[in-house]
Image 1 (cartoon, rainbow, N blue to C red):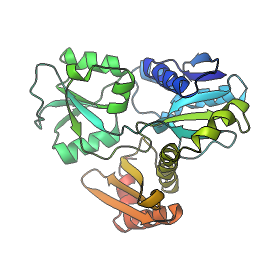
Image 2: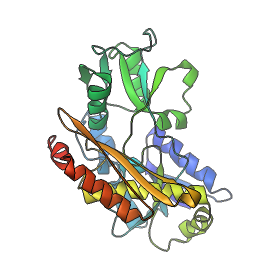
Image 3: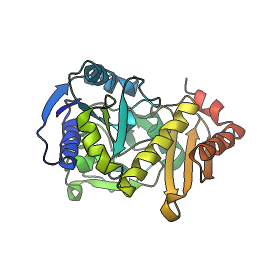
Image 4: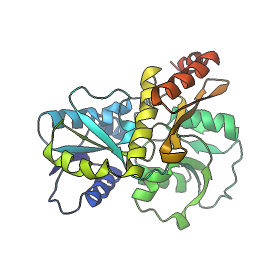
Length: 297
């Protein structure tokens, strides 16, 4: 099996995680430096997350690989017309507020907080009363080095990324944030051409696993809502879908949209996915959520 992935340390760790899910298969890794990687290396912050995906998708379509591994949060809300995908992995959805080693892990509003995410920036403003939020670029290791070199007092990172990089949490000076996160955070995506023989082999087992199927379905639900309101993981929106009740009969989607000076919460619940999403969208529209979403454009 030929596997395409970004060349970053985290992307390779995620690919290794995928390999552990498909034991007894010989694999070959193809590392691709995407447009997003190039922009990030130049210190650019404001670009579409799809830039981390597009070059790999082209490689797949041209039969350079059988499957590709992505962070689900980087995947566009709309499904690629020529490719299929499946979301997988245990969900680890929290953000961490990581402080410099010499600072007491209690946030104060004047602290210099580093984040490159609009959603995290607005959450820090509304929920932490942060007054000094500044951009930060680079991979996880680079950001931690910038933090402990004194460039920042604290930074926000995804818990899942730190776990997959096997960062020693006992050496981190952090608190876990109780905030909603972006669609697909902590989840991985395997992408492939329809009828790919390798993909069909492992998907047979995955689709029979109830817990794994729920992970896929919940992530699809989050992405579907984003697509219907023309939002993305770059937008100032947090969303989380859950399946609750016997056999996950209740489909629930909750979220928040952050404007420049206010935010709103919304929710939809039904035994039918489309109805739950429609109810959530009705609620956010009634609260002027779309207007708040567009305030950042």
